[in-house]
Length: 225
Ligand code: 5RP
Ligand code: CA
Ligand code: ZN
Image (cartoon, rainbow, N blue to C red; front, side, top):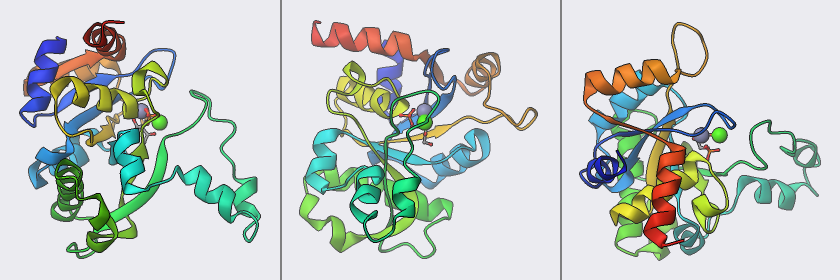
């Protein structure tokens, strides 16, 4: 399954990844950002329905200069004490979140339409692919409608979130280490889509559905560790 996942990801297709029964118990739709299209965005919005985010490797995040949102809040808490009170020290499924800042490409209008969000995501992927990190502020504005996620350094070897799994998949596929992820929600239950329903969706739409355990094991093999 991992081979098929890598092939799909390389072609710009959607890959479905379930993290773990001991974590969020969520499946995210994941795509390489450089291949993002408005059609992908429509599918993600209608069939996944969660928050559309852009996982970025630690290296690319450093080159762009983007912080964890918690670091921004800490830095600003002197002037705005409530930001200190809001510290997310009680996340039930992990030690910390991957949230960074939100952005829109400067050529978007509101930033939220499928065309606009696909534009922001694809342009960010291409900016990192082409190494034009110094142009980030020239071409993007913040806040925006696309949430950036900072991957932990060493990604799945250090944290096992969809953020890190997206970057591990990109590394194995040899694509730019910027992706898109969005949680699959269930309209009937109001919860996350369970793995049986995800498997059905994957079959119907000819998509690869992979567990985090399989992806992480494959990454260890890839690195020879
Ligand atoms: C942003 C999230 C999602 O769970 C997303 O999958 C990234 O987070 P994580 O790396 O914690 O899995 O919280 O919508
Ligand atoms: Ca999360
Ligand atoms: Zn997640």
